[in-house]
Length: 361
Ligand SMILES: [Zn+2]
Image (cartoon, rainbow, N blue to C red; front, side, top):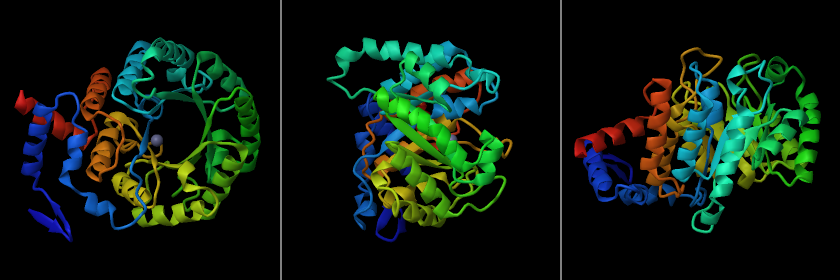
């Protein structure tokens, strides 16, 4: 055994045997047993970490949008359904944007409509299990109306803490982008649709480099004031480290209640899980991730994309934090989409657990 202060870590081989036993004893639910490592001592040092973290699964949108291979609508629909069946409380399904900008998302209405119909057909089960919320990205009022017709539960708008990124990416200043959001937020309010606000480039920008935490706090405050129920802080290029994450979060918390803040990390420099750990210790209780680590980084060709949901679930359950997600079913969903894309998973936890399951069968 290695030791790290008061926390004793099992050797890798022991972890594998432990998983083997868990998986064979509990084929349909490995989740609660991952808490048996008794790592609660990690959490008890501060009052910060929550008991439950809501994971927002962004693989079908953020992930697939940044994969090179096109995926058929039927496969996207099946992937989203499998994620919901694994217990994901929120899934970002697609993005309503002009097909000229992103041809791969031309099927947004078809995919969202099919998922909404499926959810409706499952209404009778809602009393037994909390229903998954399905969200879509909508950059303006025209696309908001299309998302509404397709039956989305929630819509998301996308702003940047970096002035340079805003101008390059959405062709307007940060302040002008806020004006565009106002009409989406007002239409959403009229239709009783919750809105999620994304803030990109919270720890660095591909065009201007440093992004001051005060700019992140300012935009987050504006989005909260306008009525966003959740604000997701994204390290779009994955350059941040845990210390920077904590510094940025403390600045944002001075403007916005931490209960509405989510974090969205990319693993470009291998810092995503460490950053999430630091954020959760600060009291963050909403985290975005992507099954199988789908997605890449448009600013660093070949680099890793979003943090993998399986790795995040493994870490949170190991901290004694509930997610409501069934790891085995989550890996089934990831396996499915990796086969469709004809590529291996980027999740280390999925690789280890799948390997242990194969040995046990
Ligand atoms: Zn992302």
